[in-house]
Length: 253
Image (cartoon, rainbow, N blue to C red):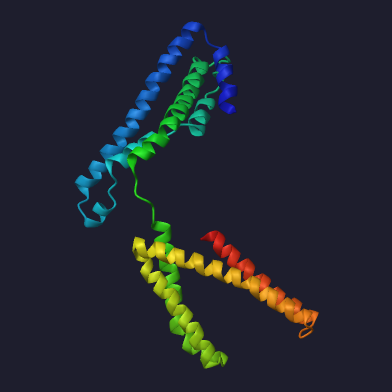
């Protein structure tokens, strides 16, 4: 909105000759800033490689395709226009600031060209770059879940003794934690990852389906007058909570 308002204001203050000169300036400025960005991205990469020979640095190296994508993704916008609008309208003597309309015209022109031209090219460049899938979040989540489960499993005997928990309950929980750890450890490979995800989805779907059977059973027991409405509502509340938890888990998966 601000670009549109300022651009038409600047155009009204320029002659046709000045507009033609401004269009050339827009093309030149756009070429320069895009060229400088590409030059900096590639030059800084090779400079770092020249100065830093550590093995850790080699692991962080990006491909040439990804650097090209970073160069195309360099849009210009609010900061550039804010700098242009910071130019005062008049000088100390009260006269108009020279070529202020030209400065705003060129700045907004560069913004429009980079947003439209580079923005339209970016999806194609991203597909051309063939970047690998980012698994950093999944790996960090797997690490957090694994460490948390391992430490909880290690603390389980002490906590169970402190709470006076029945050994059968502790054994059941230990088995669930061990199964969860097995799934987390086998998630490292793609095939196992898909299998584990499919296992979780089927597990959630099966539990949701069985909840329907549980509801029908408690309603039937109430109809047979083997339980009253108070017990029915208590069990239904428990089943509702479990259903909400499973539905949220299914949505996340």
